[in-house]
Image 1 (cartoon, rainbow over the protein chains, first blue to last red):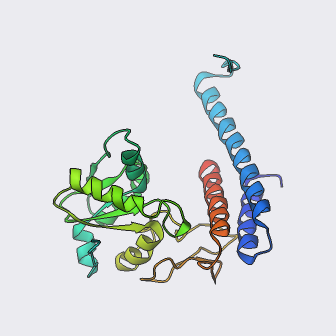
Image 2: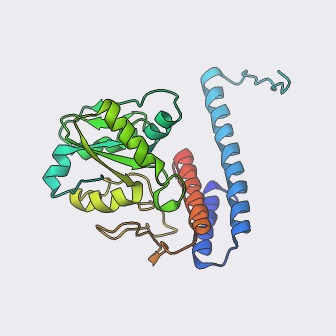
Image 3: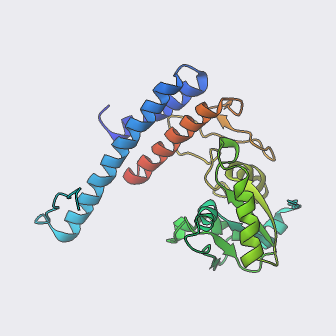
Amino acid sequence: MKSTKDLRHFLLNQMQGIADGKIEINSAKGICNTAQQVYNTLNIELKVASARAKYGDDLKVESLNFDA
Amino acid sequence: MLDWTIRDKDEVERDLILVDDAAMARYASGQNKPVIREYVYGENYPIWLTFARFRGCDSRQPVIMRGSRYACFLRYGGSWGGMNDSPTHWGREIIGRYLRRYKFTCFDHDEFNSVVRPLIGRVNAKIGGMTRDYPSDVVPAPKCDPWGSYSIWLNGRYIGGLTSHQRTYIRKLWNLAGRIEGLTGE
Protein backbone atom coordinates (compact mmCIF):
# COMPACT_ATOMS: atom_id res chain seq x y z
CA MET A 1 0.00 0.00 0.00
CA LYS A 2 1.80 3.10 -1.21
CA SER A 3 -0.78 5.78 -1.67
CA THR A 4 -4.06 7.10 -0.40
CA LYS A 5 -5.64 5.57 -3.46
CA ASP A 6 -4.36 2.19 -2.34
CA LEU A 7 -5.71 2.87 1.13
CA ARG A 8 -9.13 3.66 -0.23
CA HIS A 9 -9.12 0.48 -2.27
CA PHE A 10 -8.16 -1.40 0.85
CA LEU A 11 -10.86 0.17 2.99
CA LEU A 12 -13.57 -0.43 0.46
CA ASN A 13 -12.50 -4.02 0.05
CA GLN A 14 -12.67 -4.42 3.81
CA MET A 15 -16.22 -3.14 3.70
CA GLN A 16 -17.09 -5.91 1.32
CA GLY A 17 -15.28 -8.42 3.49
CA ILE A 18 -17.29 -7.41 6.52
CA ALA A 19 -20.52 -7.63 4.57
CA ASP A 20 -19.53 -11.08 3.37
CA GLY A 21 -18.71 -12.22 6.89
CA LYS A 22 -15.08 -12.89 5.98
CA ILE A 23 -13.71 -10.37 8.44
CA GLU A 24 -14.38 -10.70 12.15
CA ILE A 25 -15.70 -7.78 14.09
CA ASN A 26 -12.56 -7.35 16.19
CA SER A 27 -10.47 -7.25 13.05
CA ALA A 28 -12.85 -4.75 11.53
CA LYS A 29 -12.57 -2.60 14.63
CA GLY A 30 -8.79 -2.69 14.46
CA ILE A 31 -8.79 -1.83 10.79
CA CYS A 32 -11.09 1.11 11.45
CA ASN A 33 -8.92 2.40 14.29
CA THR A 34 -5.70 2.08 12.34
CA ALA A 35 -7.21 3.66 9.26
CA GLN A 36 -8.46 6.51 11.39
CA GLN A 37 -4.92 7.12 12.65
CA VAL A 38 -3.61 7.13 9.11
CA TYR A 39 -6.27 9.59 8.16
CA ASN A 40 -5.43 11.81 11.13
CA THR A 41 -1.77 11.80 10.17
CA LEU A 42 -2.58 12.60 6.59
CA ASN A 43 -4.82 15.42 7.72
CA ILE A 44 -2.10 16.91 9.92
CA GLU A 45 0.47 16.67 7.16
CA LEU A 46 -1.80 18.50 4.81
CA LYS A 47 -2.45 21.20 7.40
CA VAL A 48 1.26 21.69 7.98
CA ALA A 49 1.88 21.80 4.25
CA SER A 50 -0.87 24.35 3.93
CA ALA A 51 0.58 26.46 6.75
CA ARG A 52 4.03 26.32 5.17
CA ALA A 53 2.60 27.42 1.87
CA LYS A 54 0.99 30.32 3.66
CA TYR A 55 3.78 31.35 6.03
CA GLY A 56 6.84 30.01 4.29
CA ASP A 57 9.35 27.29 5.05
CA ASP A 58 10.59 29.17 8.10
CA LEU A 59 7.45 28.22 9.96
CA LYS A 60 8.31 26.26 13.08
CA VAL A 61 5.78 24.34 15.09
CA GLU A 62 6.78 24.09 18.72
CA SER A 63 6.11 20.90 20.63
CA LEU A 64 3.19 20.99 22.99
CA ASN A 65 3.56 20.73 26.75
CA PHE A 66 1.10 18.19 28.12
CA ASP A 67 1.53 19.56 31.65
CA ALA A 68 0.20 22.95 30.79
CA MET B 1 -47.36 12.16 15.64
CA LEU B 2 -45.16 12.06 12.61
CA ASP B 3 -47.59 12.90 9.94
CA TRP B 4 -46.17 13.82 6.62
CA THR B 5 -46.57 12.27 3.24
CA ILE B 6 -44.75 13.58 0.26
CA ARG B 7 -47.36 13.61 -2.43
CA ASP B 8 -45.55 14.89 -5.46
CA LYS B 9 -42.39 16.46 -6.72
CA ASP B 10 -43.79 19.97 -6.74
CA GLU B 11 -44.64 19.72 -3.11
CA VAL B 12 -41.12 18.74 -2.24
CA GLU B 13 -39.69 21.59 -4.20
CA ARG B 14 -42.09 24.08 -2.76
CA ASP B 15 -42.59 23.05 0.78
CA LEU B 16 -39.71 21.10 2.15
CA ILE B 17 -37.35 22.39 4.75
CA LEU B 18 -34.54 20.45 6.25
CA VAL B 19 -32.71 20.41 9.50
CA ASP B 20 -29.63 18.31 9.48
CA ASP B 21 -28.43 16.10 12.27
CA ALA B 22 -25.68 18.23 13.72
CA ALA B 23 -28.22 20.86 14.59
CA MET B 24 -30.10 18.43 16.73
CA ALA B 25 -26.95 17.27 18.45
CA ARG B 26 -25.94 20.84 19.12
CA TYR B 27 -29.35 21.64 20.48
CA ALA B 28 -29.55 18.55 22.63
CA SER B 29 -26.15 19.22 24.12
CA GLY B 30 -27.34 22.57 25.34
CA GLN B 31 -24.46 24.38 23.68
CA ASN B 32 -26.64 26.81 21.87
CA LYS B 33 -29.79 27.07 19.92
CA PRO B 34 -29.86 25.48 16.49
CA VAL B 35 -28.46 27.65 13.80
CA ILE B 36 -31.16 28.24 11.29
CA ARG B 37 -30.16 29.70 8.05
CA GLU B 38 -32.31 30.67 5.17
CA TYR B 39 -31.00 29.42 1.95
CA VAL B 40 -31.10 31.86 -0.88
CA TYR B 41 -31.53 29.92 -4.01
CA GLY B 42 -31.82 30.92 -7.58
CA GLU B 43 -32.72 28.85 -10.51
CA ASN B 44 -31.96 25.55 -8.85
CA TYR B 45 -34.29 23.25 -7.08
CA PRO B 46 -34.70 24.22 -3.46
CA ILE B 47 -33.55 20.78 -2.55
CA TRP B 48 -30.08 21.99 -3.39
CA LEU B 49 -30.07 23.62 -0.04
CA THR B 50 -29.03 20.31 1.36
CA PHE B 51 -25.71 20.55 -0.39
CA ALA B 52 -24.66 23.72 1.25
CA ARG B 53 -21.08 22.57 1.27
CA PHE B 54 -21.00 23.07 -2.44
CA ARG B 55 -21.98 26.66 -1.96
CA GLY B 56 -19.30 27.46 0.54
CA CYS B 57 -21.57 27.15 3.53
CA ASP B 58 -21.01 25.12 6.62
CA SER B 59 -22.70 21.85 5.92
CA ARG B 60 -22.88 21.09 9.60
CA GLN B 61 -25.41 23.76 10.10
CA PRO B 62 -29.05 23.19 9.39
CA VAL B 63 -30.51 24.93 6.47
CA ILE B 64 -34.05 26.11 6.32
CA MET B 65 -35.71 26.82 3.06
CA ARG B 66 -37.57 30.02 2.60
CA GLY B 67 -41.31 29.77 2.20
CA SER B 68 -41.54 26.21 3.39
CA ARG B 69 -44.35 24.56 5.24
CA TYR B 70 -42.82 21.22 6.04
CA ALA B 71 -39.73 20.35 7.98
CA CYS B 72 -37.71 17.22 7.64
CA PHE B 73 -35.22 16.38 10.32
CA LEU B 74 -32.34 14.25 9.31
CA ARG B 75 -31.31 12.45 12.39
CA TYR B 76 -28.22 10.73 13.59
CA GLY B 77 -28.21 7.02 13.82
CA GLY B 78 -31.29 5.71 12.21
CA SER B 79 -30.90 2.30 10.75
CA TRP B 80 -27.27 2.24 11.78
CA GLY B 81 -28.11 2.15 15.43
CA GLY B 82 -27.66 4.52 18.28
CA MET B 83 -29.75 7.50 19.22
CA ASN B 84 -32.74 6.28 17.33
CA ASP B 85 -35.43 7.87 19.39
CA SER B 86 -34.04 10.98 20.92
CA PRO B 87 -33.47 12.86 17.67
CA THR B 88 -37.17 12.72 17.08
CA HIS B 89 -37.59 14.34 20.44
CA TRP B 90 -34.98 16.94 19.58
CA GLY B 91 -36.77 17.59 16.35
CA ARG B 92 -39.97 18.24 18.23
CA GLU B 93 -38.17 20.56 20.58
CA ILE B 94 -36.65 22.56 17.78
CA ILE B 95 -39.90 22.71 15.89
CA GLY B 96 -41.77 23.74 18.97
CA ARG B 97 -39.34 26.44 19.89
CA TYR B 98 -38.24 27.86 16.60
CA LEU B 99 -40.45 26.60 13.84
CA ARG B 100 -43.94 26.56 15.18
CA ARG B 101 -45.67 26.94 11.89
CA TYR B 102 -44.28 23.80 10.35
CA LYS B 103 -45.43 20.28 10.18
CA PHE B 104 -42.47 18.03 10.38
CA THR B 105 -41.20 14.54 10.13
CA CYS B 106 -37.99 12.84 11.08
CA PHE B 107 -36.04 10.62 8.75
CA ASP B 108 -32.66 9.16 8.99
CA HIS B 109 -30.44 9.97 6.05
CA ASP B 110 -31.03 6.74 4.25
CA GLU B 111 -34.77 7.06 4.48
CA PHE B 112 -34.57 10.58 3.23
CA ASN B 113 -32.44 9.64 0.30
CA SER B 114 -34.69 6.79 -0.67
CA VAL B 115 -37.83 8.88 -0.47
CA VAL B 116 -36.79 12.25 -1.77
CA ARG B 117 -34.26 11.38 -4.39
CA PRO B 118 -36.71 9.56 -6.66
CA LEU B 119 -39.01 12.53 -6.41
CA ILE B 120 -36.41 15.04 -7.28
CA GLY B 121 -34.80 12.85 -9.87
CA ARG B 122 -31.40 14.34 -9.36
CA VAL B 123 -28.32 12.40 -8.55
CA ASN B 124 -27.14 15.03 -6.15
CA ALA B 125 -30.37 15.13 -4.22
CA LYS B 126 -28.77 12.94 -1.63
CA ILE B 127 -27.61 13.70 1.83
CA GLY B 128 -25.07 11.55 3.53
CA GLY B 129 -26.05 8.11 4.61
CA MET B 130 -24.95 4.89 3.07
CA THR B 131 -27.07 5.45 0.04
CA ARG B 132 -25.06 8.32 -1.32
CA ASP B 133 -23.33 7.94 -4.59
CA TYR B 134 -19.72 7.18 -4.18
CA PRO B 135 -17.58 8.08 -7.15
CA SER B 136 -15.34 5.12 -6.84
CA ASP B 137 -14.05 2.73 -9.40
CA VAL B 138 -13.62 0.15 -6.69
CA VAL B 139 -17.09 -0.48 -5.40
CA PRO B 140 -20.18 0.33 -7.39
CA ALA B 141 -22.23 2.91 -5.61
CA PRO B 142 -24.48 1.57 -2.91
CA LYS B 143 -28.05 2.18 -3.75
CA CYS B 144 -31.39 2.06 -2.15
CA ASP B 145 -34.78 0.95 -3.25
CA PRO B 146 -36.93 3.88 -4.26
CA TRP B 147 -39.44 4.50 -1.54
CA GLY B 148 -37.87 1.84 0.57
CA SER B 149 -36.96 2.34 4.14
CA TYR B 150 -33.72 1.08 5.59
CA SER B 151 -32.92 -0.63 2.35
CA ILE B 152 -29.18 -0.55 2.22
CA TRP B 153 -27.27 -2.10 -0.58
CA LEU B 154 -23.58 -2.54 -1.01
CA ASN B 155 -22.13 -3.65 -4.26
CA GLY B 156 -25.42 -5.08 -5.37
CA ARG B 157 -26.09 -6.90 -2.16
CA TYR B 158 -28.65 -6.08 0.49
CA ILE B 159 -26.86 -5.54 3.77
CA GLY B 160 -29.73 -4.31 5.88
CA GLY B 161 -29.80 -7.69 7.57
CA LEU B 162 -26.27 -7.52 8.88
CA THR B 163 -25.54 -7.15 12.54
CA SER B 164 -25.25 -3.71 14.01
CA HIS B 165 -21.51 -4.22 14.47
CA GLN B 166 -21.06 -5.14 10.85
CA ARG B 167 -23.02 -2.11 9.75
CA THR B 168 -21.13 0.10 12.16
CA TYR B 169 -17.72 -0.83 10.79
CA ILE B 170 -18.85 -0.79 7.20
CA ARG B 171 -20.08 2.69 7.80
CA LYS B 172 -16.84 3.77 9.47
CA LEU B 173 -14.78 2.43 6.63
CA TRP B 174 -17.08 4.09 4.17
CA ASN B 175 -16.74 7.41 5.91
CA LEU B 176 -12.98 7.13 6.18
CA ALA B 177 -12.64 6.33 2.50
CA GLY B 178 -14.80 9.32 1.76
CA ARG B 179 -12.75 11.61 3.99
CA ILE B 180 -9.54 10.49 2.38
CA GLU B 181 -11.09 11.17 -0.95
CA GLY B 182 -12.10 14.59 0.30
CA LEU B 183 -8.59 15.36 1.49
CA THR B 184 -6.79 14.21 -1.58
CA GLY B 185 -9.37 14.89 -4.23
CA GLU B 186 -8.82 11.47 -5.68
